[in-house]
Length: 333
Length: 264
Image 1 (cartoon, one colour):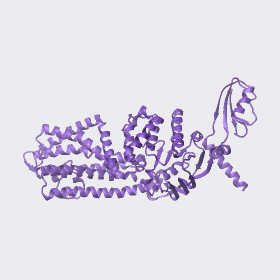
Image 2 (cartoon, chains in turn red, brown):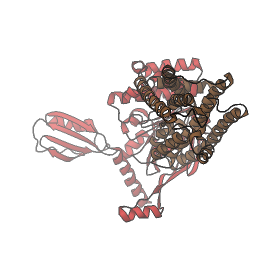
Image 3 (tube, one colour):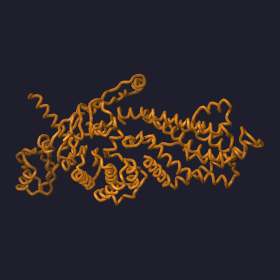
Image 4 (cartoon, one colour):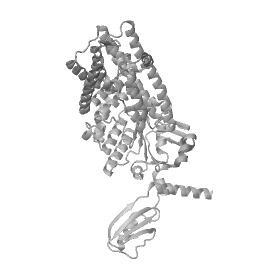
């Protein structure tokens, strides 16, 4: 199969105006133009096959959105190549945008003061969706995204979760080849997140739509993606199976346990106590040293437990570990 | 293709229709200032029957027409496009498979149609109720007036579009906008017919696109221009629309280039 998206040695640099502070600095700002070059994307390459659902992961400011903007044709790369469905996005923007769908998490693309259904109808004209296909797609999305509860509500009165659902439907009315989702679950509560995730999964599986999903929420990726690309400071740090990422760099998880009484000897082999606060003890443990259920069963065999919770590692910690490991690799080689 | 732009215009019409209270409040304000302006002009005419080609009745009709066009054009300002550039929402609009200039023009036609019906025609009706309004001297003048109204909207749109694009380069585009709208109000002949200005000022004003916004329609309606000059007036409006639209497209291309290279 030929890839639907191929990216080679992609770079994007931004010039940032350097401000000097203070009265003297304000004067210098007037007379000099000093720029700092920021490399938002610094030489990345990947290929995506039709029908893949890829998670594009990284901390804030890593270069995720810059990549997506280049893929959607909103930004022109400083150098490198992008090909999406045989087109160069920024060179053939109108042809390109007619065949993709994009949803940017905290950005609304619908008309603020129109009811949702009117916005969708307008998009039908803009993308020239045949009436019969429009009716069929709208019926599907009404059911899958439960649009009926707010179909006639003006967009400005929607909740954040409803806004996301409406924008998802809007991005898919014209059956795009590729769907770009930039932080689609940001700021949503758990129920709303789950609904969005299930929808993404269904359109990927049932329609075979290629989906690229950026997020800094590991749980989005865990629920949805087999393949993960991780980016930080413009570099692609990892591209492969999610299971491999977690096994190698998943970082240490934490278990917070509330014992019924204060315990003196709470130590468990394979887990490290990082905090003690009366009857509450926090353990940190690596995936390969001990499993969460093993740790819990060992503790509950010895003491009475009132409550417990497992904390997944932050994505920042995962990135840090990848760096550490690379550093070790370099030392060894 | 045309269906897309027609749908855009239709929905813009609906959007503006939704603001009922704002429409009523705007109408009340327009009516109040309309009466004020009419009485000031009547007082200024005093014993004179004609000033710079305008009779008292013509002058009162002039205030009625300009008050009618105020919201239609809209002379007091337009911020929609500028705001989308400032907030970065423009990225979404640029990501639609339509021509960006026509995309906004279509929506502005819908807006203008709504405000003409909701704000313009009622003002004219009120004027007709309280004053004796002049009528176009011939059916030709009436027809040319209607054409001129449409052309004025196009010129107005191209000017507002161009001014809004300044937001690509300056964070204080609102200041640019306020200045630009004020210039248009004065030079279009909204405050005072262009013919009332000193000859040198009038000559300079007629070199700008602004009289095409207001003064041209008024002069056609009142029959101040006729014959070949009438066609010349319409051609002048068309010229300014095409010139401003061409300039807008150039500036837009530069702005988009900056956006796609430097980000929002």
